[in-house]
Length: 136
Length: 136
DNA sequence: TCTTGACTTGGACGAAGTCCATCGTAGGAT
DNA sequence: ATCCTACGATGGACTTCGTCCAAGTCAAGA
Ligand SMILES: [Mn+2]
Ligand SMILES: [Mn+2]
Ligand SMILES: [Zn+2]
Ligand SMILES: [Zn+2]
Image (cartoon, rainbow over all chains, first blue to last red; front, top):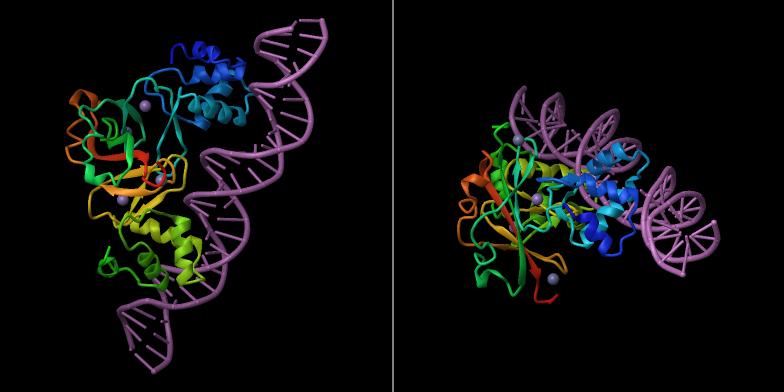
């Protein structure tokens, strides 16, 4: 994330205060915020920013590959700025906390040919579930 | 699934025509329907069945462990009656088709101790993504 | 400084899901 | 076979999450 603004400028993005503040909110490790959480934190710095702009900006960052959308079971999407470092997720079943994790092994290779149904398998998303120390 | 109705009766469920038709709709292999798809198919057999009842029944089946909710990225939840046979999913990025798959290996064991952040990891959910033969 | 098209905004709209007061009925009791 | 009633079904209002749009604003190049 650290040079996200620079990369975006390089891609010809018009730099606005709204886009800057959204990018700032997404900075850090283990960041997996919902759109509304991003809006809340962005509005703390830039009170007039609209929900529509937050959604627009997040959508553009996803298309550019700078942010990942994380699957959920029925809840609001989470946005993950750690897109340059392939990783998986560990989610607390109690409080919902999300941590980035890096399993060893080759999950794609573990899917036997006869289980691929002719698909061209390109990626795998893994979610570990359990209780965090605080919730245990 | 085949004896779902019997198991539900054994758990003291009141058997209604609505619950029966929802259970029937969920019968089969590689079934991963949204609530609205379940409602549509159920209504073909029992036209008066309401959306609320479909949601209620699916929710109860999930609590009983007879049906699993499958994660999605921003789309409607999918309900999976194949809960007695642990498995993972292969999803077509083109058309959204979902297949049940059984990878080899031990995904939970592949998560190193120092990557567990003190969590008690209990389960793992894996989604393979790729293009199906029809979409390739 | 001027111009202009890209960006932002608020509100309407839509899809997915929940809630609730009321009505109906499965299944045990008689 | 009939009665009772607690559990289940219903539909419509409501909430949450997200998209769309017409109108206004402004970043940045000329
Ligand atoms: Mn992450
Ligand atoms: Mn399945
Ligand atoms: Zn926790
Ligand atoms: Zn396909």
